[in-house]
Image 1: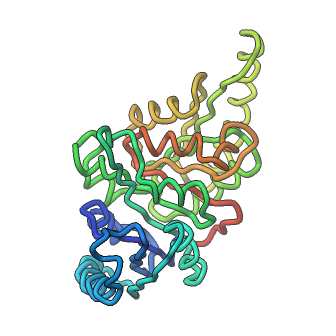
Image 2 (image 1 turned 90 degrees about the vertical axis):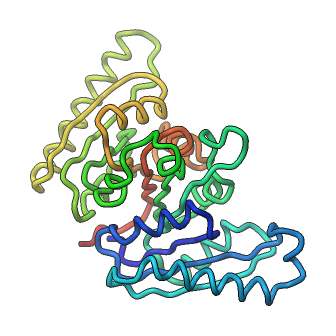
Image 3 (image 1 turned 90 degrees about the horizontal axis):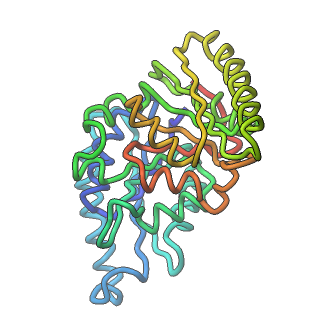
Length: 290
């Protein structure tokens, strides 16, 4: 499904860790390593574009070595932009017909464990290519699951939150096509209801819908479990991911209720910002291929 992967890199430790994991992604055939040179680079480099390109080329060559031996067709690409780096990333993704962008979501600042990098945040909110976000904190401070689980079994046990919209169910149908999945957890969070009776009705309706989805997935030979809870969607998703020790959270990019907030990155941004698992954002219009 993710045959053509674009990996933007800023040559940080987080981007190198991401490269070490990409070799374990199932079905990858083509990889493009991208570095974007922007006006945000250090001031002493602004007037030395040739030097910056030479330096970036050398670093790309070194990072390329981390992918060798994986059986990929590997390309390197350097592009410059006077504007937003995320727009340059999406432009190259479109040019390369990429089916997945992989980013290390590295935070900056005093409390970097609760921030995504600005580029990752912008790609999450504004991109239109499937996106895999890997929080650098997972590698850095040991808060999350073991690195071996993240890298070697990224798609073994995935959590698929759904607001029961058509687009969310389409995303689940796409997710089930990923090679190597052993178990899918379906989750719905009830976050509205004027009375307890309203809430109980919504819970029952959600259980019925998830049971129907589970049956369709189990017919394909997958192990499937369902979970319905109440509360804040992002908090409930993060809590279940930790409790069930999932290797990945896969979310639709659009929905009818809380997932529709992805237009401004709300729920998915909060999950990626506060959680300790990789987050796969499945964009509308993705195709299921094996």
